[in-house]
Image 1 (cartoon, rainbow, N blue to C red):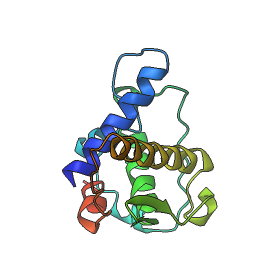
Image 2: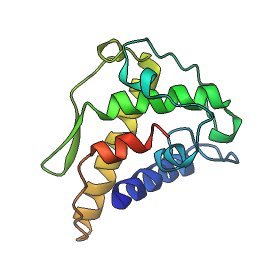
Image 3: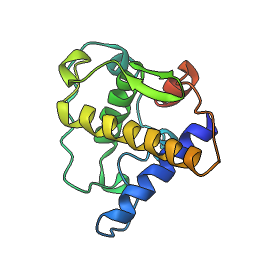
Amino acid sequence: MRTFLTLIVATVLMVSCQNKQEAGVPVLNLASLAAIPLDKPIDTLAKGKAFIDVKLPPGARIEELSKEDLGLLKAAAYRFFGQVKLVDNQYIASIKEGKEIAVSDAVVVAYLKAIANTNAFADSLKKEGQEIQLPAITDEYRNALLK
């Protein structure tokens, strides 16, 4: 699990370095997202069917978001990563649109890009002779988002 979180962090940093420099932690930094405790449980929201719409400004940073928006983002990540499997050392999402998991399209597209970047990062390491095995998305990882 630490390897997966490290890859996500590295991918986000790599993408951030290619964009304009901004202070703070990117919203799609899943390690940081999972590490932030919430004021109230989001289990019911994450495991339910209520539509999750998180309106994120371009270049949003974790520290700029309210606890409510962070909870929504974590619940959306819980649903999204429930649809991601590891196949031949690549993360494959079985969804393409947010309506499939009752999450806004913008959030799903952002997470799809994040796993695509993680896959590309793993591939680039392999080409450099540093093959790594990406860890599977486990219930333990997904449940960490609920706290």
